[in-house]
Image 1 (tube, rainbow, N blue to C red):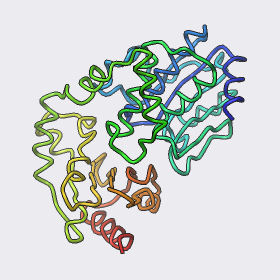
Image 2: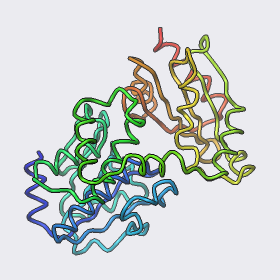
Image 3: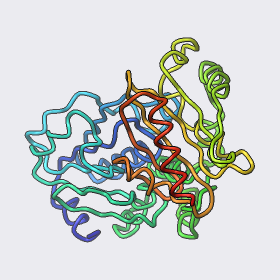
Image 4: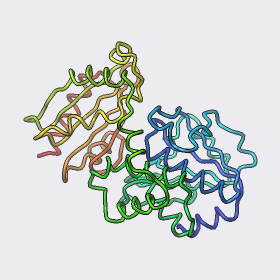
Length: 318
């Protein structure tokens, strides 16, 4: 599959890159790394994302080139869909992919849906960023500092700072090579993890007041609703990473963040420890992800959703 993707890259000259809504470090780092590699090869490249770039990732080299209005694709040859388990995750313009001559999907999520084009998927790899590193190595690309920085950020964030079980020997080797190519681990980490706006800290303080426990304290949950966002002046993107706080509590096996998207609509982000596979739980609700990190969106009253989800988790833990 990699050889076919390389062939498409060499054969065509005009590319569109896109990723999922609710952007994270892997999605953005992957897009921007591929952008730098392709433009260095003399290709014309456009990055489209439905959502604006979260503040914490705007330091990434090239982030200002991203557009948020669907571009004119008449002369574009290939679209790369990165880090998307299904094509519909790029948002309301997903149907426009039918306009594209060639679709290439690169993703590391379990049960990726592909898209009728070339699909490069490996759920055993830490991140889409690591998959692109493998692609570039096979292309014998000498990465620029800008591309290396973006790939490092992609891998760093999707491994939870190299703490998750998806951190393998190959992951650390790739990170080391990216540092060799100019990625600065301290600078990247400080920009992502140590540069939080005050509104986010105020939001976190309020959200932690919602902390609750179920199933003999094995499951811990927190809630981000629109009322709390308005009270603290925070943005929805500021809740990224909050699900890790309940997970860090001794004895907790599964943490859940209930994030209110609209009235009676919630996104649930789940994290787990050791061998507990929350991807299976998320899949039961039409979502997905990874064994220790998964998510899904569901509609209904929060009380009913919580009751049903805890019941499902209880069956799973038994």
